[in-house]
Image 1 (cartoon, protein in one colour):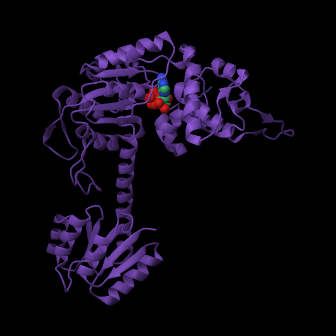
Image 2 (cartoon, protein in one colour):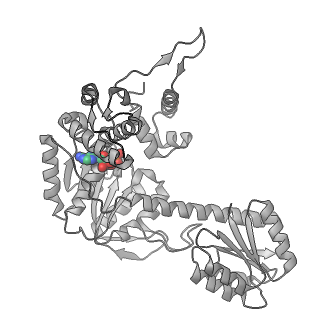
Image 3 (spheres, rainbow, N blue to C red):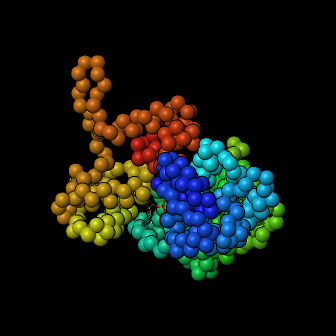
Length: 456
Ligand SMILES: Nc1ncnc2c1ncn2[C@@H]1O[C@H](COP(=O)(O)OP(=O)(O)OP(=O)(O)O)[C@@H](O)[C@H]1O
């Protein structure tokens, strides 16, 4: 339930607002004086107050002064100012001082509720962005062990270390889950930029406008909801490395902006006119055939050449079956330690199944399978029954005319398949209809074996 702090020197109005807002799903705290409000806000933490509704005329303190203090004390809490009819100057001043919006008294209750609703939506979005940014950057500086036994992956690894020491931009190609992100962070960790930021961004996880503002930042007022200046990831990666995953999904507008920052080493924040200098090394990755994308006009050729100074090609897991067993043992160790379980080995049949399977989702799929197996394991060995691979999905015979009874994930698979078919395999549209992110859809396509050629 969102919390509103309301401050007005008229007790009747406070009572009215308290009743109105409480009845509409808000938690309300009221204050008759500006300094009481300030004291409470200073003592509150981020979770305690979502929005402040404040009268601009107050007996103890000038309302605009209160606003000024509020903004410097807690710039994260948006303030809506209430002004009297005919005092537009106050409203203008308040907006200049950083109020989110103003509302003129007397106002119809719907008007106030709409303003608050809209504000909380924007605020929620901004917080989600913040969480997303944290999520996106979670990989920063991680130094995971790279496990392999095959000669072909050894070559990839050697090339990775070799190119890491240069400052060239690098393009990593490989199917989903082959370890592109891991290679990117290894490049950074072994480069002269190692002590500087490593920032990773999945371009397909964000809408076009959000991606642009995440990358280049925005200035206050650039669009509705842009209440503060926001640094972009390009700027945050200054001096370090920016990893752009799923670069093949980037729109032409963002492609043009990326080309500029790579070529000119400067960028312009959304809503700004002033270019800013940065020094960033770009590592990009995709599971798309970029040459095809360039040929079909969906990806700029000049950007392709700028990013693709050196290419690292990651083989799929089925092309390096020698790596399956060491990887499976590696994930077994990780998840038994995590879940504090004593599972040390594989039944022969289980190992044979792992070796036989085609792994369309590559190392990520193997990791997921191992995590699940460890969770479900009841003894100290991984048995074939714990592995959801290579077995036919069971159906229960149905009475004449009725649909067969199938497992829930089969229903999910069929539904995703049907929507994909209906949209002509348009992934963004499909994800939108299903109400899931593009990334989740991609994962499910792999998991359910629904790639374009196979979703017949
Ligand atoms: N050689 C390896 N050794 C150990 N762990 C690995 C190896 N390759 C991949 N992994 C692990 O497998 C998971 C998937 O790898 P990663 O995220 O790097 O793949 P990706 O190619 O970037 O996937 P996507 O294309 O879906 O973004 C990660 O948890 C990663 O740490």
